[in-house]
Image 1 (tube, rainbow over the protein chains, first blue to last red):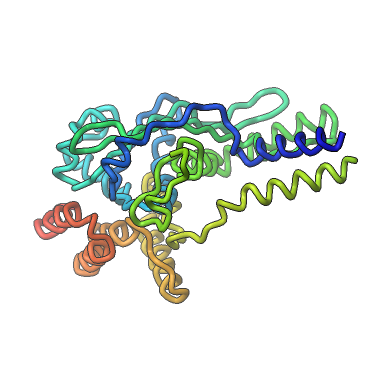
Image 2: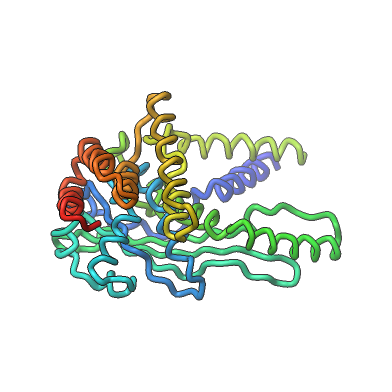
Length: 222
Length: 118
């Protein structure tokens, strides 16, 4: 009995810390060989109807990537540079050959982000703000794909239980949706999603970059 | 049994997630919110952004924290946009000095700034 309890506790804590996953480990050979110092994040492509989505995501990528140990090009300026050169559509920007990007920016690697979900939906008993992003990191000289990943974040993850019965839940859902729309919770949830997407601590996450003290000291699984 | 079980879970969570508690490399202050406001083209965005970013910089130097990649470049661009070219160029050069990885792009921006483009 003690042992069952112990293993149940351990299993639950593994789930809570997000350490346990069944995904196959990623192949980091190309990533390690490329060993990029700097990452150029392109304006994300957007599969949602939220016009603000690319801005919400793009504004949230710098801190996690910099903390991972990379030089991150100033995202707003990069966006301006594309605009000044007649490139305003993310799909067109993603189609620019990476060698050309290397020429202008001198970036070692380029990060392509695609937004699959972004925004608040209202269901009868709950409203939920969800952000789902996918990304691909490529070497600008060889065009090799170094890493791929995806992440999801939702405001419903943070809500606790509710003891107010069905009426209480309905009121809570309505109030929450008004609040989530007014407070621009998309931006906040995008921040969590970006953090998950780009954190080297995640399973199959990015490797640490040269500016991190953890660079080159990856876990054995990487 | 429940209390004991929960305590066990809590301890295990604290131990297992302990590996993530590393000190941040940089102080970014309001940078990401400023970038977001910039994208949304909010009213009085530029003046407010400059003020916020200058505050982040002075706070960082007071606490001896490092300014992260991009902040000086973004601020430099804002100054150039608002007509304060020399201050703007100084911040672009600061970005290059702190982060030599940016050299090629900053040189490109400086060339544009000198030519009166942004």
